[in-house]
Length: 115
Length: 110
Image (cartoon, rainbow over all chains, first blue to last red; front, side, top):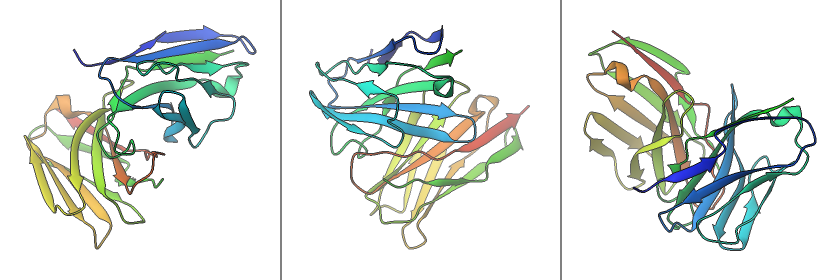
């Protein structure tokens, strides 16, 4: 089954404790992306990747890091989480054609709470 | 990247009625996509309409695109309770940065 998986699905942590949210897709997609969703603000793109070792900032990259060492994986790293990073996070992937040109496949989401 | 603006922000209808939601954007596009999000879940791609298309159908969904007005509409016919969700448009004019709007929250009541 074609899918995007994220782990963990739920996470409660404390300020400053480094964490990683994993994202993996089994569709051989080149383009992968991270979003955060907050009430009243819609989905905002954090980082995206066009292919292995190619990443770039989205609209809200501050406080986040990503890496793309393998085509299927695109982890999101919060080196020193703060309460304003409490949010619902989504990973997505798609075929190329500059990323947005095809439909995005979304993961199930990770609900993160930073205390 | 450009962001679509969905209208209305919220819509409540009875089961069996049609639901229409609109999307406006600012600059020229190559295509426009519509997505659905059930509460707290990941978005699901519904339909993509290219800039040279005026109308597209998929099951009970009908999407129209008017590039002269920079707007699109999504019509869901004979709505069901299971259609209750948020709907987002994504106008794409090229580039790799993608920006979603805040969506239209549709509630279909029994």
